[in-house]
Amino acid sequence: MNNPNYQKTASFVESRFMDLLLSDDFAMSRLGFNRDELKQSSTRSLLDIEEKAREKKLKQQATKQEFKVYVSEYFHENLFTYLEQRVADPDYIFTELLQFEPEIPKLFDACAAKAAGASHFEQIIARIPWLNTNFIETINNPPFREAKSIKPKVENLGLAIRYVGLDNTKLVVLSQVAQHFLPHSTEPYNTFKGRYWQYVVATANCSRQLARYYQLNEVVAFFLGLFHAIGTSLALRLYLRAFDTVRVAQMKDALKNGRRDIETVLNGLEIDPNFISDALTKFSNQISYRVFEKLGLKYAVVAPFVEEIKDKLAFDQASPMTQVLMQARTFSQYKILQKARLIELDEAKIFLTNYKIGNAVIGELNKVNLTNIKYSK
Image (cartoon, rainbow, N blue to C red; front, top):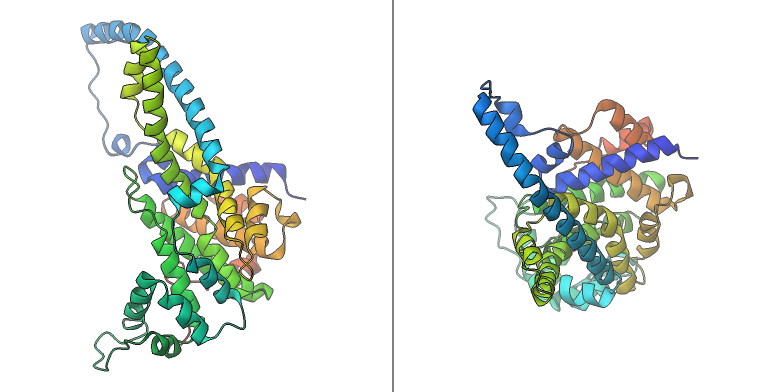
């Protein structure tokens, strides 16, 4: 049985990781730290007259601030209702948030199917122009080709696949599709894309290592680790789009009802990372499940594992592949939080223990390169 206190701590740490995906400063601020305050402190005290003026100004602002808080809370209630409706609609997710070629699911299945050969991959990749180009470019550069090599470059797709081998082909195309799914912009959270990519690569590599350790399908584990958090990326994209959509609609309603005071407050509302982090925590796993359920994969069947994550199944109750993902993502989150100095030793012990990450598993995961995909020689 899982310790309820351990589960609670793990939940806090996972939420903190969501904060960190948005920005370092926001994650620190939620813990009560401020970098500017740590770097400099003012020793100047307010003069009595300044203090009195400040108190008077605060009293005048109090009523206005209470009204702003009320309007903001009402707005976000409606925003989250809107988000829930969109998350429940897989057609919206696939038409507005995640558009891709119909060959992509076939590619995923080919990576998981043992019988898929080089010619099969060649046929699928050839029908995805951007992947065809990226694949050939990749195998003509390190680590597949020495930087100063004078050998002729491989230009033919079929030869390129045979040159690197099927195992490497699978890793290359999966990573390139995952990169293709990254959002073009996450303004104003410009560090999100880089840290998200760092996280999913680390999780994919750890999943692959643990699958080998537990004697499970390494490619499926790698695929699951690489794409399990796609809902996080899509949830952020959805939130950033929905914010103005809902805000503008409410502003129009306020003016229609003669409430210019409400319209003014709504017009001044800015994106709040506190609400975004809550939205990511609430909707990420739901969206990931919707994506894999809609894909209807035949061989790369991972929807049941993502569903177990969505349903917050305890580690002991989860299937072996879900346990692999749980341990891989937990270790990856721990290492990223540790690097950012946002997790204490006692928290880390509880966080890892909650997912049965003992010395043997840590020994396996310490073998993993968390930043780069390791290809076969």
